[in-house]
Amino acid sequence: MTTGIFWLRNTLSNGLKVLLFPRPSANTTQLSVAVEYGSNQEPEEIAGSAHFLEHMLAGGSTKRIQLSRSVEDSGGILDFCTEHEYMMSTMDIIPDKVAEASFVISELLFDEDFEEPKFRIERKIIQHELAEASDDPTIKVEELLLKTLFKNHPVRRPVGGFPTTVKRLTLDQLSIAHKANYVPQNMILILTGNFTQKTCQTVLKCFEDKIGKETFSRKTNPVEAAKPEMLVVEKKAGLTQTYLSIGASTVCSSHKDTPALDLISVILGGGTSSRLFIEMREKSALTYDANSDHNKGLDFGYFSINCAVKMNNSVKARKLIFKELSKLREQKVTASELERNKNLIIAEILRGIDNPQQTSDILAYMEIQFKSEKALVDYIDDLNAVSSGNIMEVANTYLQEDFLATVLLTSEK
Image (tube, rainbow, N blue to C red; front, side, top):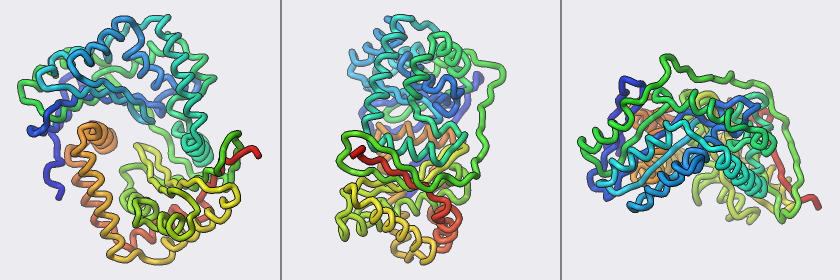
């Protein structure tokens, strides 16, 4: 089942990590570069700088705008995205345009020229983006949960920063962050899809002569052990439902308990056979959708359950969720349910690997977290080794009621 999810991994003399995942039957090529500078790496006083810098890569000068648009001239797609731990740039192109694409993405990443007028324009665009995020209750309730679970860790801050910090950011601050972080030692180049060895050599020529720092180190954050506030209620005008999020801080991606926590999230909220879907939607009609997730990174982890219910049903929904968590702590999951949910996770991984838009993200995440070309195979092996006893033990370790925070985002009425 896991055959075909190894990739080639190498490091150039300048420190650039290179991951190759050829798919000869594909009709297009994906060239991606992940820069390990996300919102978790930025100082709090310049929160939003990593995301702002992402905007400036493609829109920070007249030259950059022209380069970005040139990708579309040959039918390609260029996309940028910032996460908590990295910024991802991806080009999806036809194979015979790889040379041009390599030049474009290299120029966008390493060129240090940005223009003040473009900076001011991008600031306004980002302010619109932050306003849209603030209007979205699903985004807002997750932000509230993270602020409740983490008191010091930067994952508690929105990736895009805050309107106040974005307003204060200067072009000089972004330029300093660019020079410090956009270096080969802090980058992962990923080539997937249809390409040859000659294509690979062409791509690397645009990157192998880039010079980085002699030494480069990443900041790590200490684990937080304090219990969160158990109930937080915030009101927002215009809502017709209450948005409910229940969560707990957990462990990082490399911790031995991570596969069991991932399984618990699918048992509770992964698909139409999940416990919360059956209890909250099919039996009680409390919500349209109830989902759960286990998010984790290099030095953080958190578990969350989310749903939207009528204003007067939030107490009932909360009790039902707590009841399902209690079952996991007190009763062993059956062998058939455990096997079904393992299959769901593995199949989702394989679908992601088959999807050209997701493969690069998966490989970048695995490289950042595990630095191994067999990370997915190892994870699946660890997942398959989880027992019903492990599920109960982990649920008792991290999902006791005293460790859970409940956030309600509800109408001002």
